[in-house]
Length: 140
Image (cartoon, rainbow, N blue to C red; front, top):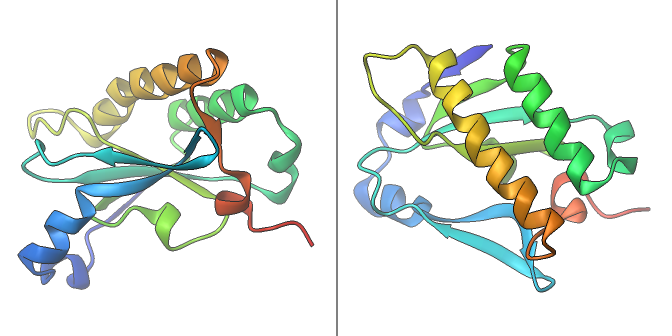
């Protein structure tokens, strides 16, 4: 587990912060990039998991299981305003749904497992798919 509140994030201007609140996710809806409106959140924290090249062969459901497994084993990074899936290949990021400062960051992540479960149900229902080219890069 690693915490990363970079100087760049701390000096990010308000326009950039607001732009990130309507952000591209790792998912596709009807074959098109899926965006989330996170504007109701006063602050934006992300939890990110690194995947491997070998993970590409997993089904979308299995990838969500891998994310949950890595959350539980504390193999994640927590960042402030920086969704690592925008910056790094093989990375998936989810907004932290409960940023209660009374809770430790691992508690935030455990609560966030419910969000990943929700996305997994959306995948099973056929409403979302994982954008593998976005996460892993296009196939050669």
